[in-house]
Image 1 (cartoon, rainbow over the protein chains, first blue to last red):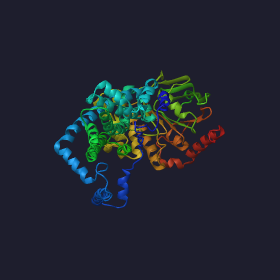
Image 2: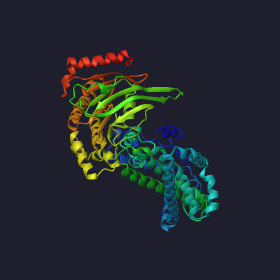
Image 3: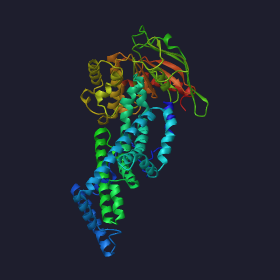
Image 4: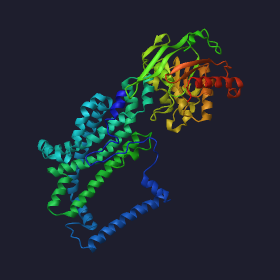
Length: 304
Length: 273
């Protein structure tokens, strides 16, 4: 126990997220607050229907304001397009199948990179979480690798793995890896000392303690890592495509940039946001189902 | 520092019962953060017979929890011996059930699944374990809560799950480290009564650590009084009160006399400051 206690100090708390400095909130089992925004609205005494109406109203107002500003100030659509031309570009892109074709490529890169990065993070995290020695030996390299901006390494990956999907998958995996790893390590060490002692007193083996106590206690943390990871995966794939690609939404953005198609770029940004939101929501859904015993885990992934 | 084995307990009829566990010249020192050493236990020695309920009372820092942890095999003594069922304790054994101050239940397991944890890690036969788990859940009055999750239970109920869990393998010895310390006064009194009932029905040998003198007198056949700096046994009191204990007992003069004598002893040894 003493060794584990001592080694925990080597880990920064709260765990830094990733390249963009995203920081997660460490889970606090006692905190019972829901999403603060919702609570704030409920505090005002709004019904669900009125709340939806309010959200929709604000959206319409923002769109209207955007449209009025762009038209009244006579901004060139080459520099800042209005909402109408963005929706038009989105429709054309979708109807022609262009966004879909490139979107599939990017989504595949995101999912494959996420799967590989998360798996590596989980495995190495489990190893380091169990052994203070491994942490002392390996963690400095992990942190050193993490401090290198992935955008800066991306050209090398393209050089090594080519202009196809492989290099993007590697970059995405490299970005996803760290938040999953760091949260797995902290999570595996989050089990209360009393709980471990109790299991030990019942003559439980290290394997039993790992499987029955440490892993379930780690899950809320691991899902924070996965949630941050899935959102960062979108960035990873786009960064890879910017450096050099033949297909993908990032490639499409660059192409439209060259042809001064600002509205077309806005359209892709919207698509990317939707992909990120859907993946994030899917992860939250899985997390809620898996760690059913705590209702605070949805709080954990804010800030991503 | 009295050797208890030489002093037969007076209130229990198990004077002839074999020794369940014994401490012999036990010392325990810790290395403190500034490099010095702290003596947690100094020459502790007493023996407890089978079926006896012994309580250990003392202020924080007197080493009473360390004593329990050594008996549970969670810590090693620096010198001296701990005998459990005639054998020296060198690590956790299957013969011991443990209850801590916090119930530390696994929140993703139901009440029944929590009670089954010790049976599972020891690879006991599932059908017999299940029967025993249900039996002990009934004993602690939670037979209707078997499928609930811990967060649906009150603190007192959670601690009762912890007690059922400690008993599920029919241990020879039940170790309790301030098991009711986190409960409110009324729940605590009820839990004390329940514990005496459990003791009566199981015949288990129990060592309970507490910092409440009345609780120690109320529960114990014998009270081991400990003082800090260094942690040592200053007094062992045979509690000559009726075996059937009720809450009214607390208001009697004899009960009060035990409590004040122990308090005086702790004051004299610098235990309470």
